[in-house]
Each structure stands twice: as C-alpha cells, then as structure tokens.
Image 1 (tube, rainbow, N blue to C red):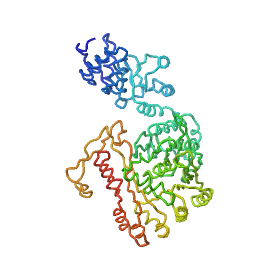
Image 2: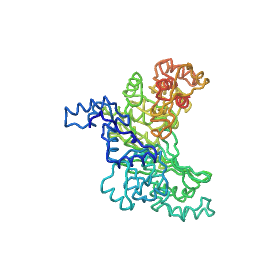
Image 3: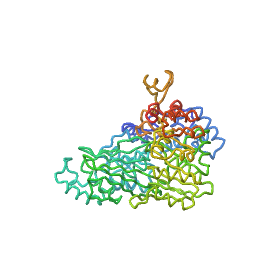
Length: 584
C-alpha cells in the first residue's frame, strides 16, 4: 500500500490508559481493514512521513530487511517502540496498569495460584471475554489453559513486569487468609491465644506465601529495606527505595502475629519472645542469586515492629570509577590505597555508602598480588581472593580479638568494618605503623572531624600523625528522576544561606510511575577528601578545635562537602533541597 494513501484515524495509542480506550481498541481490531506498521506509526505520531518514506525506499532496494529493523538502524525508533507497535498490530496492546481500577469481583475470576503461575492479572470483562494483563505474550498452551480455567474467552494485553508484580501482590494475597482468622479488625482479648494461633499460622501456606511474596517483590524492586510497622488499627508494609520509605500495602491488624512469627521462624529467632528486641538473619535465593536478609524486631506500643535489610552479595559492588570522584580526587584516592603503610578512614553517618567505597578500594587493591584480610560485622559482599572474617561477638570474637590474630596471618592490607572503641582504634593505627595498609570506617560528621574523634577516644597525637594518610567524608544524595524533573522552588532564606544568586535555577523530581512516586532515581556520593600533609600533622594536638582542623583541611586543598553537593545541584542531577538535607 502506498504511504500517500489516507492513514486510518488514530484510535489506537502506543499505551492505553483507561478501560474505555481498551474497549475501543478491541472493537477496532474486529474490523476487516487492519493497520500496517508504517501507517500505525504515522497515525500515532511516533514517526514522520519523510522518515517512513525514506525507510520504505531503502527496503525496496534491500528486500531482505524488515521495516522495523531499518527504523531501528536509523535511530528513529527504539527496539521497545517497534516491539510494542508490532504487538499492538497483533491485537495485543500495551496498557498502563496503574491507571486501571482492579475490582475484586474481576480478579477473583482467576485463582491466585493460576495468576501467579502465568503472571497475569484480570483487569476487566469485555463482551464475555476476560482481559488479562501479562508481562509478555502468552503461549498458545497458556492461553488454552487460562481459557479452560476461566470458562470464558481470554484476551491479553501487556504491562510492565513491575506493575504486574505489584498487582499480583495487592490483589491476591488478601484472599489467602482463612476467613475465620481475619475477624473484624477488633483487638483480641486473649493475647496468649492469639500468639499460639500465630505460631500455628506461621507454618501454614497462606502465611508462607505472603511473606515470600513481599520479600520477592522488595528484591525485584531493588529495595534496601522492608518495614512492617504496627499501628492501632492496621499494619503498614513499606519499602525503602532509593533511600525513601515508600508505602506499599496496608494489612489488617490481625495479620501482625502470624507475619512476625513467620519472620522469626525463617531467621531462627525465639518465636515465644515478644517483649525484648531480637536480631537475626536469613538467606534466600532469587533468580540464581543468593540474598542475605538481616532482621531486626523490636517491641512497640502496638506490637512488634520488623525491619528486614536486604543484602545482595553479588550486586551493589562498584569500581573506584563508579563512586563519583572528580578526576583529580580519584587520582589522589588511588595514590592513598596504593601505599604499603598507613590508615585510610571513610567517615559518615549510617547509610552513607562507606562500606561500598571500601569494597571499591579493595577491588582495586586486589589487582596486585597482596594478602588482604577483612574483619566485618556482617560480611556484606563476597570478594574472591580475600580472607573475609565474620565477627562473633557472642563468642568473644570481636574486632580487637580478631585483629590480634590477623596480624599473625601475614597480611599486606587489612580492612576493618568499623572502629568503635579505643582498643580497636589503637590496634588499627598500630597495625598501620608496623607495615600494613589499613582501611576502616569511623562515625563522624565530616572528614576533619575524624582527627578530633580519634583524640577524644584516647589515641595519642603522635600515633595519629604517624599513621593517618587520608580521610574521606561522604554522604549519599538521591538523584532526581529524569522522567519527571520540574523546576524547584527555592526560598530566599536558603539562597542567602548557601550564597546562591537569584538567577540560578534548580530542578527536582515531582514523582511519577518510573520512580514509584518518589521523585528520585538512584543515588550518588557527595564527598570531601582530606589528604594529610606535614602542615596538618604538625597542627594535630589535644587542644585543637574542629574549626581549626577544618580550616587547615580546606587550606590543604580539600573541597568541602557542601561545595561538592552544590555542583551536583547546579548540574540539575540533584535537587537543592536534597543537597541541603544531606550536607548540612
């Protein structure tokens, strides 16, 4: 057909957002005149007419090529766009599942078992046919099975895997609970009976499936933590995504005892203990990877609160070049970790990426033939070619005891997960003095503050001067989502505090489907790298103040944390509010 012929009216769209649009689409494909790929792309404004004509001319000279291949090769369309268009022409459109209201009477037309097996979600009934949203086009056998079990014709549409997983989680887990257990939401009078029933329910399939489901969902979404937060009349399930707590689901109050009991079972905690905090760990397999879970349970006014930290030992490792160093700072950091003696400290609050930076340094160090021994609590990532030691404080095997044994094991490089007390700090610095490169972390607000912290702990100034070669202070800031960035409103007070001009424009994410409504997409480290020189070492004394040490560090070439953060904000990658929050 010539491209000069009138194109059909664009009743189909690249992505359908509502039931009415889906109804119109299925009415359209019943008509005898179907779309051609080029016509569809023109009508939906995904391609210019001149581009299509050029591609068709090229195809006429190269008969073996498909139109979609030519459009991709020219860079006019992405593979995803071509695939979506072809699926639409096959009668399988793509929808935005989050825009559809999923009614229980529709989702219950298909059992939870079948929905999970085929990873499909019923979204509506259309002319006696059940419309199913799936991650990919279903096979003929799958369609036949679903048609048999649903007892009606089946139509399929495509949706994002994350949206399918979220819908499966929200629509089907509620129905798995025995009706006689859910009750009416009122608090139980006999608490002991509730917990005895919870212990029994913890081993039942509905409870097991529910816990497995939200753990798997959190791992798939790359959450760092799962929160089960008890309230007066409900239990809230939240994930920490890109550093932000995101509400996922509200559960009935009666679900708390069996869920907590199940989590205690998998982490080998005392299921009968409900009045004292407990910490445990578990391990799960997900898509061929081994995932460690660190579980913390504490009693609160409304019941036990649970936080599950997700540690993927195969993912999350970064190279030095991926930390975010400026070229001159990267060269300086590489020089520090290339030395044979001394101690390099990484400082910052909990969750600031200190361990990630240390592992990046270890990956660089292990390129040379050296004996590397680490002491960690816990071992967060596994690295080949190193001896990694997991602490056992309960058995009297803490940092000081372990360090003494390590020094007899002929190490070249020692990594200490955290320096918490005077004994550990003194042993670490003395190790750096006797021909070892030591890497460790310290909890301080900034890089120069690490010197004062060591002095406060009781380390002598002479030992600090002789061993500390550099200190990296860092924070993690959340990158603004590129899909929903909008201009940020900055108050005059903040501009004045940060020394910003009125004309400077900053950007923030407002929240969209791509970023789960958070406005953020990924995180990056902002830092200050403090390299000690002779002038700084001469000034280290018990009476030195934090202000004096910071002035010396800046005079020695350290770029302050806030200055680095502002450079990210000015580039548009990070909001000014995020920089102010993290770097103040």
